[in-house]
Image (tube, rainbow, N blue to C red; front, side, top):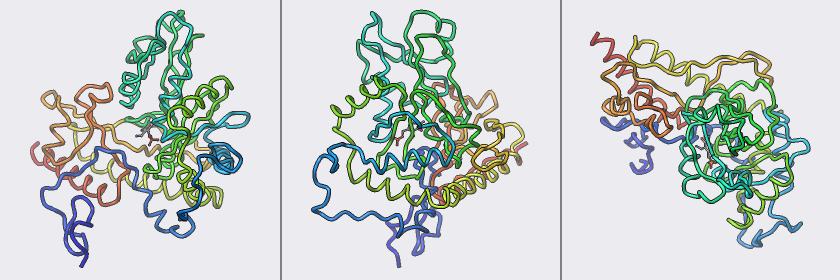
Amino acid sequence: GKPVCECNGCYTGHDCSELIPDCIADADSGNPTFLEPFWRKNAASSATMVAGWHRMGYEFEDGSLTSKELEKQIRKLHATAGNAITDGKYIVFGGGSTQLLSAAVNALSSKVSSSPTKVVASVPYYPVYKSQTELFKSMNFNFSGDTMSWKRSSNSSMNFIEFVTSPNNPDGQLKTAILRGPNAKQIHDLAYYWPHYTSIPSPIDEDLMIFTLSKLTGHAGSRLGWAVIKDENVYDRMVNYIDLNTYGIARETQLRASKLLNVVLQGDGRNFFDFGYETMKLRWQKLRKILSASSKRFSIQELKPHYCTFSSEIRSPAPAFAWIKCNEEEEKDCHAVLRAAKILGRRGRVFGANSSYVRLSLVNSKDEFNLLMHRLEMLVFEEATNS
Ligand code: PMP
């Protein structure tokens, strides 16, 4: 039989079908392995092979650090999904979108102002915006907390960089910029603005938009992100950052991404995005059904359906994360409540929210998701029998 060590997380036995009794359902990390079955079905056409002697040099044949073929595919993909306008804009690659977040802050910050540019994000926000900006803080910029607390100052002479995450991590809401003053610039993090997670009401046409292969195809370990940039000067500053920081993105990564996008683009993206959305839709149906049995103890974010131009229908959002709220007074520490029921989520505090919130990842493998649903069902059942 198969050795035990090859089973995933909470499973054991010769065919990995036995659940380890007290095993914790890990819904902490947003590792997007839900797409793995699609890539198993398309294993041969999506495979990359690189011989030892091949592609050893720093640059591509044309002397550049970016694959023109991959750039073309990315533009085509945005046109196909209808999620972003890339015409007349520049594209720069990064080591995941993580590297581009910092490159963008660097490029948008003022070099001439007497006080540092304020970097802000709306609560609840993806925690890396804060931790990364704090790590790299300089004379030019620093992290200044929740966007809302600066709303009234946005028309002043202060310089702002606002992170706008749509759909938002952790709560899946579609977002637009809050600070609109003359000195406010935005970084639109569109990691989840793809048809698996949301309806696509219209293509986004902003000055600086960031995407990642991680949440698009699920290949988080390849570490590829890209920024779509309107302004040449901002583009130059971001390229300069990447040049000095890592001197470009691994050619293996670019080659692999190109292979993957080739498969994604087949049949106008229908096969791929339908698989993604159907999987996420079914997961949300299951989650909603389980939580509907909870009278008041737990609730999840409300999500509004919108018309989706990609699917030509009105679609309910099916975001990557459930943003759970524990409702009762005595359950202020929602993370602990879930943890006692053998569910590991990420604390609301991490996202700048209070401890009655917890984020649960819904993008893991099928086994991990099913175990999470099983544990949630037990927890809700316990509430029903106690009341
Ligand atoms: N932005 C958001 C909103 C994310 O959720 C993530 C990953 N969790 C990232 C950026 C970074 O992803 P990566 O570096 O893998 O592209």
